[in-house]
Amino acid sequence: MTFAQRLDRIAGLTEARLGLLVGQKSEQSECGDNRIPPRLLGAIRHATLGGGKRFRPFLVVESAALFGLSESAALDTAAALECVHCYSLVHDDLPAMDNDETRRGQPTVWKAFDEWTAILAGDALLTLAFEILASPSVHEQPDVRVALISGLAKAAGAAGMVGGQALDLEAERLNGGRALTAAEILHLQSLKTGALIRFACEAGAILGRGSPEARAALSAYGTALGLAFQIADDLLDAEGDAATVGKAVSKDAAAGKATLVSLMGLEEARAELKRAEQAALDALAPFGTRAATLADAARFVVRRDR
Ligand code: GRG
Image (tube, rainbow, N blue to C red):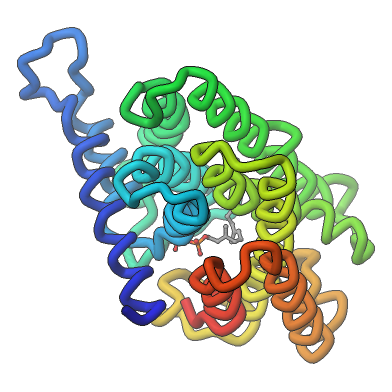
């Protein structure tokens, strides 16, 4: 199976699992106190289903495979993480944040529904993630489930993704905007984009009860991969084609957003991307050829066009 086929396979499995997880509590449900108002459910499904690379679920499944776990044993953890990712996109697209009208080639949730429904759909997805992780279907051992809950909460929260988003918006909007240094950009991106990607890689070691050394290696891989992912995203914004990328491009420059591309220029950003790719590959050394698919993932991130 090629890397693209493998990514597609995990995306399909994730989509099917999410379809059940965000569809089983409809208005038609016989279980009265579990019903979700239909409009809200529609927005949650719009946010979650029918698109996306499912790259974070892929990282969970592949990092868990290093410890001998099957796809199905990692899938609920992968789906929970994707719920947090989808929530972050719904909120990021809101007029008060990035004000985007297209996501994954579709109208964003607030455009397809309205702002308050989009806010509530995001809230519901964030909390659903932890409901999923608390379920025994994630892992039979409660201490593993608690470690996943704690890890995802930290990665998504104020010292993780939310904190990164706050730093990004503060730099752009407070005191008339401020140019960030490269170190400041790297820090905010390691939170905003990096924290969830890093957690996706560490999740395999948590599920598989890997050694502290193995978890540290996956964390280092995730850190480098997250950086590469963000630089590639910024390059796509600067050079990509909106139809292929599935969302508006050239937004960073228009908003005066601080990115490594705006700070260093295209050539140096591409060189930084290559360095991040190499750091990701180096971090996988302890796993040898067993990590071949994760190595391909690093190469995929660097060459992606969407
Ligand atoms: C609103 C709390 C809050 C956080 C938002 C994730 C994020 C923080 C903002 C998204 C804006 C952005 C362009 C981030 C850079 C990289 C990124 C996360 C891109 C989207 O992820 P992909 O490419 O999307 O994995 P798909 O659609 O494939 O799932």
